[in-house]
Image 1 (cartoon, helix red, strand yellow):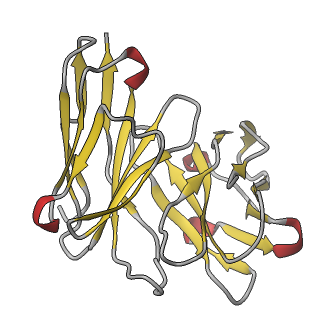
Image 2 (cartoon, helix red, strand yellow):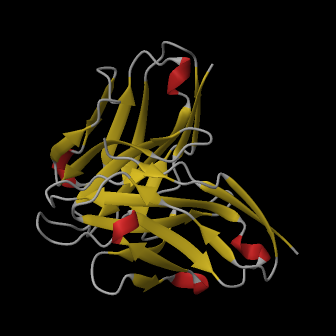
Length: 117
Length: 115
């Protein structure tokens, strides 16, 4: 499969626990993005990386959230001390883009659905 | 603030009906415009995109969209829908300058097509 892979597909956790999600982008892509989607809403931007550098973070990304992309390949998104409001679909996407060059669109993964009980 | 509005939250059509889904974005400047589709249980897929040039862009599966700069709009159209078009449709925008790459999505339109 040459698409964007996310693991796990579903995660149920108790409030207060930490969770970590993984995203494997398309190998030729240098940019990797995290979005969050709640029911009835469009995806909301969380953060993105170019190679291993985190270039932008949303204010939605509280200090309980941290994302990494070591070595510029896969990425992890960790949520500490989960809250019920963190329940959502967490989407990862990748693209090939450079500053000043057109981005021809992202490729999205299938997402990780988080349920905090 | 940068925002994207999709006016129709839920559209119900019969097969062969024509479709138009509205999308407006908050302000001008350099914009790259996208429509994504999400079929039930599947990931977001790119339908079409506009960067520059001809404001009428054609995408996959017979969809097209028209960029009207003066109206800050990028409406999606299809002359004759099929049952298989049942899905959620999202309009999205990247605002310039080009050193940011953040897609801002609308809230989506759920399309149901009945045979």
